Length: 294
Image 1 (cartoon, rainbow, N blue to C red):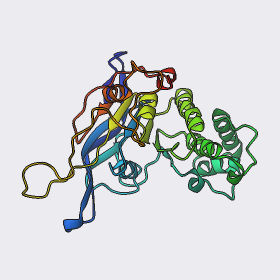
Image 2 (image 1 turned 90 degrees about the vertical axis):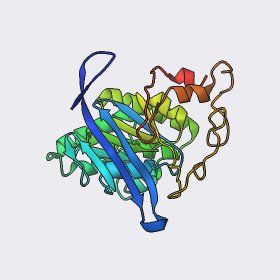
Image 3 (image 1 turned 180 degrees about the horizontal axis):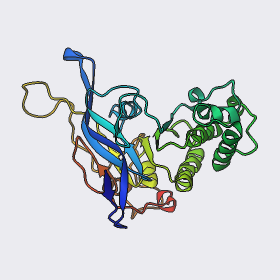
């Protein structure tokens, strides 16, 4: 399947298709519907962000896409093949870098690890590893161990390992949630640079609206399912009136110092693709680092 880019008029192949997937944990009266009838697609070379609060189903969605769990309903197709297990051509960067790296292996050997079954020549593996470490700025650290590196550097190793695999689709599960603000900004720019350099297709999960708008071509917003008891009419249980402006994790609105003319909550809300159980609208491009930190 291919879609047409409205800006260039050229056809772009669809890498990932998600068709009406849903997932329920448990059964009976204690069943919890984590995802309900969710559909979207990702085109080759696109960076799509999925944003939502805790409990909205972001991690469940990634596990389904990675083939780690099977959805209760719907189908996932990667490059025309239905995902029924862990697919070839897919890599993932996890939030907890300390658990995703092998502490008994050096940086070089951590990055080389997934290539052992796909690249036969050791010299070729070494060349790929060197190029991947150079791309994330870790030249000279090849023989160190993960525990000898800072948190941001460990996450760079995890990113290098993912791009060394040259995946058709890269999944990133809140990869910068555990690092400080300055490191986070540097790693965000690293993702954009890697995407350009390797022409990579990325699905990026975060709960930070600013981050998603800055990084992505499109943003998919998930919200927690509102549950209505069977047979009951009237207001949905747990529903409440939305505040006038979006609030961040600590209650701050998305209006930054020195940006009185930039209502960040409204800008972020207007700049995202809202996908709430199948309802969507388009997003305008053009958010830059200078806008974000103005």
